Length: 505
Image (cartoon, rainbow, N blue to C red):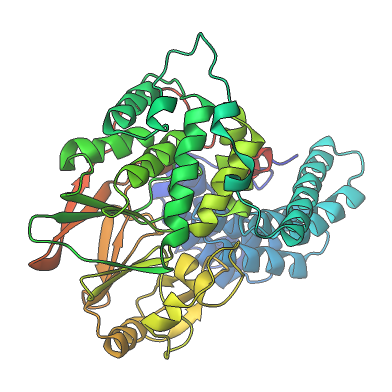
């Protein structure tokens, strides 16, 4: 019933020449609205979602009572990952026409993208009641219901044994390595110590599209679990005169692009510090390789390699966007559980030289937040839907002053005045965050006080953006940007391991 495009809305009569046509000379408001909608549909079909939204806006301005316009714009917002806007438009479509099933589909999709599975399930249930013989609707309902039950089960387990960890349940000596295993190894006589040689051999193994044995994957997880458990929610990072610090934004499972950063900028070392600022996994289909490489470097260089938690280092995102499915495909559900525990221990922010604050998303809905407030956050959990932890993971900057509801439906949008007040209160120079695709891989906003860096070029194999990273030195905290293009990768498409429900987002 639902495909990854807009159907049955006059596409048959649309032609590409309309993209260059002028519809502004049409006098009838309803006809003009239809022409704007048709033009928006063509932009959508060509995957130019920004311009599609622009023309849906015009259609709605001319005719604000058409449910189709709102549902179509909701779909475009879904593609732009503006899930809050998508949710609002879908709800408006339903208000205008409570029998318009695409409105329910769009709203369910937005809620799923936000991890609100129970709410999404209600809309799928509505569709199945109206269309009881629709196999596609029933399939989506069953898939969503399965996720809801799985989340409830996981929550129940966590409540029963909140302190249980992988350290309590893994004995490496009891895990046998098969004789035909040819990959990199760690030796028992060396207490399975992770070495640079092992990490380099592991990276080559991944480049050859092979995997390391689960015994050695578990050893990496065990080692970093102990390291992260000892770290603070806000970690202080000091750069010595013989060091440089490189800050990378979202990687999203783009393993070969991450290796390209190392090729350009040098491999991690005690002198070549790295901070990867969240969203290591999901969407890209080499997230396991990315995660094991990053964690291995953390185990190797615990005091000069840093990882921030992003909004995709969470269970609900992993279930929908691919990381859980990828781990299950390459290893097992148990191994994913171990990764999920590590995610809950990741620091939420870093303070560079006492002057630059780094977090994945952004800052806060209140003006009185201090660095000490961040340090006191209990991070060892799945993120709540509001509060400081949520806002660190989800918030985005906006151009106007003040605050506004987030386009994502989680966190807030904060303006230049909010940034300036936060920096002044805490004696900071500027903030660095990630979380958003940027055409050139980075953006400097809020009078130079809010810097965004995004390191996944050609995001999801479709966006065409550049990636970027930032370098800082002890004597120069002015960000130096390096941009780069995507590199080839094996023929495994982005989202290959995502939940089947994502097929219509």
